[in-house]
Image (cartoon, rainbow, N blue to C red):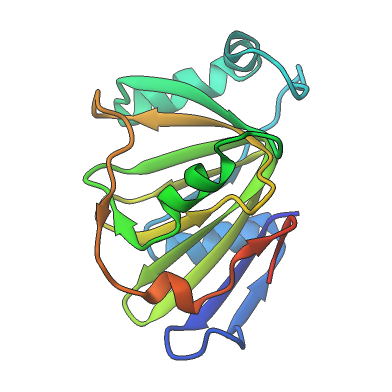
Length: 185
């Protein structure tokens, strides 16, 4: 189940707000320019599905957002708990960073924890199957897939280089809950 928790940057323990309703989550995130919506498909994708099967199942949604936002590249990333490089892959996204393009992800299966640092607030978004999140360019954030990651996500890019993170060097990400065993602490 999707979840939003909003913290003061000064208190990483007690959330100021907790929400589990997708519409309310979307309304709260829209206030900071973040897109959040849920997609449905008539062709559920099972673990182990190929990128082509994922593209076919979500073709109309992919085409719509590509046309709307002008994305030039779309790919599928799939990470499983037994991935021998899971620790390195997890570590790549755990520090606060930003991008010079919107970061748009759709969770086909599994889950991950996006945490955004906007002004004096920290927005923790647990994304699960069916969630699409669009983080505006230059928004400071980090992503945690957990120690035993399991997700399949469609990624959208406007730049041909794909994922390029610009790290802030701050320690904000270390102060807030990690994603452990499928749950945000």
